[in-house]
Length: 332
Image (cartoon, rainbow, N blue to C red; front, side, top):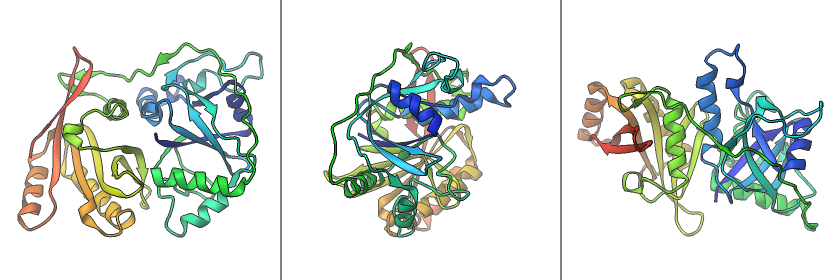
């Protein structure tokens, strides 16, 4: 089970709640959009890792409040039909990336976002980044770390000593058209980096590739850092409780992994050590995933190890068209 935070408006929330379907914007629907198809792949990645049984909170923009707790009732899907009938429908084909949900706990008193920011100032809520004043982040759906999700839930319980029975949510009918990433490829190399990310996220939610990545039990795509940059995927291993055994920082490149990508990966490694691991570098491991690797990057990692630095694993991916799947192999 993982935690997610959806951003909604006052207008859209009425339709989400009435139908039990949450939706995010499809950048590819606008014919005038520059690189619309590429942006669509990235948008789908926000929901690609979501699965039935995951927990949802909703951030109501206008009121700057967090509402909870809701439970995912389907995998993400693509549907261009209006969410409700009538001319006043707000959720239409522009919001085609969707997921079903039901109410799990009916918390009457919502959380003010200011409460979250105050706790964040004390070093919590790393997966929720404050940007440009009251904006939560640039993503319509944010993946939360386990600690952040459970902390939000605890805060909601603290504000709601009495919890009424759940409201009934009617799940609307839809086409259940699964999300399909653009799998344009050149041999075994994908064209879009977001397609690589989306396929990998879909595999991770099914618990695949543990022979490559180890026994992870949580993952966070688009993990924000204090430099306003994002880790492509942060893999996490917890023990039976909430104690974190290790982090793996994944930096993806659909083509060639250069020294620039390596520099980004090392910056993310340092941030994770300092911000999340309490300066315990044993907890943090870095992985570069790409189709090819510049020799400069390979040599730098070898020299880093030779002088006592940590190893950075480099993993080559291949897209197998006949089986429509990713395969991975170590190259160092």
